[in-house]
Length: 123
Image: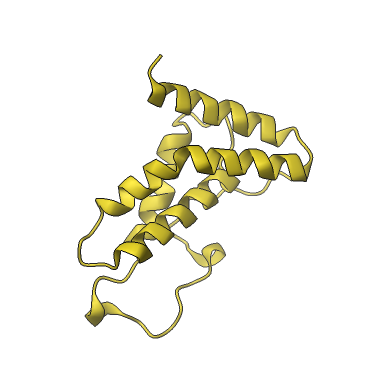
């Protein structure tokens, strides 16, 4: 099994495990999934748009990954990577492109981002 295929399986297994644990243990497991998939998020950010601030894109990508880990429900037919990629790209698309697009108002809170796939909490 390839490393990438192993990561996909691990994410599903880890998130299934997290769903059955106490909140403290579940948080640590979700953190581990974020760590494992951070290269995916950064890769999406780095290849997204050269007109936007690179650090802002990377921050948005990691935020998208965190949101995906929190909202994903194991067993989704498309799998975690597809869900995470859609969530990350939705946030990347909301990043300003260069100085002329800079809005002096802060970006919406993550809970207000309507373009991000959302699932109701199961807690």
